[in-house]
Length: 505
Image (cartoon, rainbow, N blue to C red; front, side):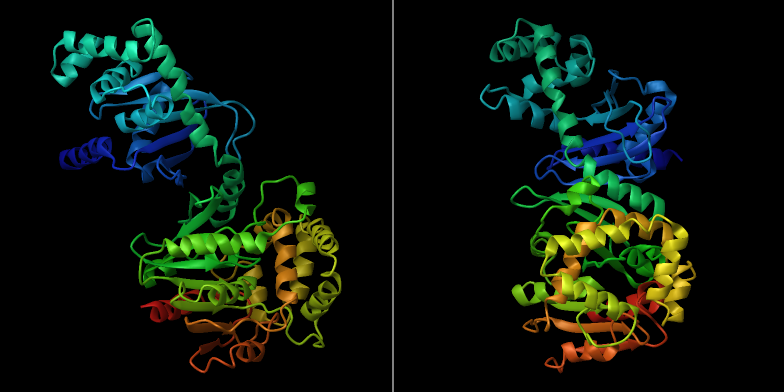
């Protein structure tokens, strides 16, 4: 027990010396219940969300303090063992499912975080490390005597540093300096709020319907645009970038055990237009989600480890993955297509899916009309019985898919999460239809080694149609999954990730 405590303390102390300053923060109810947390790097503003305090040492320590009655707005608590302080502020931008009442956001402020914010506002003041150090200690609630004892220097040395810092900041003494710097430190609220609105929708979806093992990471492209990335699988697993399709809950629900077994970590940027935080009426606006999603994929792929540039396209994401691999042939080493939905194949074929695609094909010349039709569909899905009726008709040709819809595969029962995903993804789904239906032939110019996994009973796209798409790629490996429908990622999860692992090794 003592060894474990010493190791935890050592790791906490080591965070003082971050090469890349990181802001740790967490939201609590006034009674001290943990709601969510985050870790935001201050060099590139990459934020990783945390759903359980036990998964992060710092946030776990903060949650422990709050549980002892520390969740009071305005409170500052200095942690002598780690030379940091926790600072609690009132916030009204509630996380998902916390209601609209005010809550408290706690921040871990260490020297590096403090320096990053202070130097952002005072880069021309010439504050020295010693001057910033004593200012940090004063904000944390230490007296000059306590600060001098902590750093083993004379109290007069600390007074001299405060006097010098006050002069550089044009402050009338110690209290004025603390007031100015405390006001500047409120900037940490902006840093933690920057991604919260869109993240709330995605967080809620993961918490309600995926539950196990998925985490949310927010990255900034070079142009400042945010990318919301779901990661699931072992941290040491082979990273596979995923271009998801419409019902991507099938890909990640209940999949953690199989991903761990086969050593795969999925990196899934939530495509533009999916799980959208905008009001419903805003979803009617003209958009360019496909192009924006391709830019997201390019940014993430360029930042993948060398020699591990693997891309998996699922359902509608298969067509987009082929487009990406064609545009950036040097960025994709290996490409995997899972349950590719071509939508345009066999326009004369009978069946519910073909009738739907043919109807969309007649509408795509008027993009706003196609979006309005997609929006109209969303009005029917909140009714679980109607949702079940529609989906059962769509996938009636596959017994495997019908079982998955009811939750008999890896995924949880579909109707609840499908309704929520559809209603917040109208513009993304509509543009996916337009993108797929306008491409009579998918691009084949890619150097990537190609693996295709497709259900033998997929009711949306026949296996032979997929073979035809890659007929000019004799090196492509096409593996039919016998007995599987469109949702093979849920019904045959172990087999899927076994083949993916063999392909990317």
